[in-house]
Image (cartoon, rainbow, N blue to C red; front, top):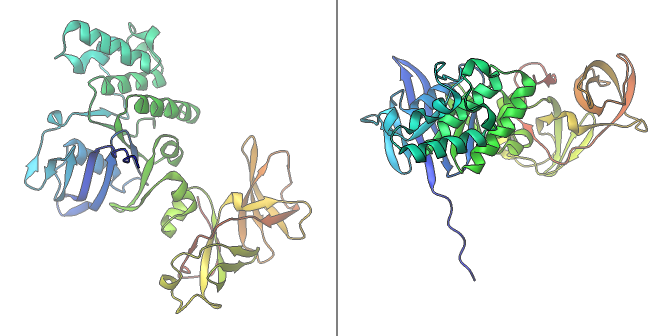
Length: 372
């Protein structure tokens, strides 16, 4: 039997890191690790501490406890702080931070001053071409669009071949369509160069388009570090269920270890952490809140189950309907846009979910909640 190939080395290891400003804790006991070539993302609302984590990794902020390791070397700890310029880290900022008096080629060459002229020129040409700007090397930043300027910033950060690339809200100044296109391009360049990267953003579409692994942050902690698929389909907490994607939590009753009954019918699948939810054993009577995503509700004219259209959002290929059930609760359904129904119309629907995501019932009124 042939031996398994060795795992890529761990480039970044953040271990139980806490950061505070004065007496105010901003990051609390945060941990994650990335192997060579992986793209990780810290995703969360404003003020959750994600940029502070990035600054601690870069060496701009000291840590109160824990440690940051780069390729096995401790670069941040309470008694140790390796300067940013000694960490072999590239950074791409929100405002691009290009030198306005330098051309594209000169900006990219800025971090290569220690190389021989011929090697430097070859490296510049390689990375300018890699970001799709080969015909713009002679131009100045003010002659470029915002998307092109961001590509220059990426090429400049990658040209010294850093051990780690940090991207701090890199697309927030760009329009939505350009963000999506540039996000895919950036991912391709990072993967092509086998660079390890950490992205910080509040935009989940951006995170999902670029990252292999994502940590959802709240109040200075990572609530779940996982793949985009698992964060959407298997959220670990109610906060993540609300924050990631769109959905509604509706009340349900556990029938047995494989089934939960809700107003729309019976869901079958593994019931997560049922004993933690509060029942003595998996049996009838346990109450839970069940997450329904828009793709769990299927439009079906032949169905006897009807719901009233109360809101609609046209999205080109699809329409996101908000539907009121007989109980008055509302659910979401993503329907192909050629099914264009009017507000107030009753349409046929059916439940089509292949797994169960359940949480302990929320305190307060027993109502469904629509996630933003």
